[in-house]
Length: 95
Image 1: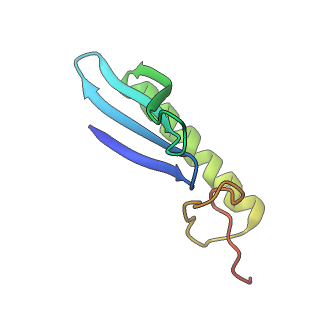
Image 2: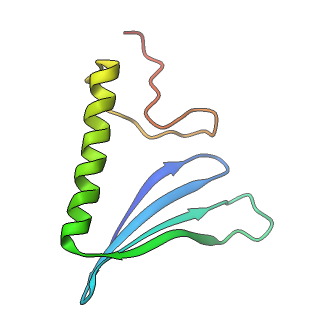
C-alpha cells in the first residue's frame, strides 16, 4: 500500500492511499484533525478503480498541473502547505 500526505497544517491533514488488490486499485482519501476533541482519521472518499480508470485519473491530474504551469508560467517546484491560510503550492519567494 502507498500512502501519501497531500496537505499538512496545524489543524488538518489530508492523505491518499492506493492499494492494489484482486479487484483493481483501492483509492482512499483520509483526513485527520489532530486538534479535535477526539482525533481520529476520517475516510472522505474511497473507490475501487481499474488500472485504466487510475490511468485516467493520473492523466487528469497531470493535465491540471500542466494547465496551472501554463497559466502561471512558473517552473518552480510546488511545496506542500504548512498552514490553513497558505494554500498548497503557494510560493512567497520573489520572482
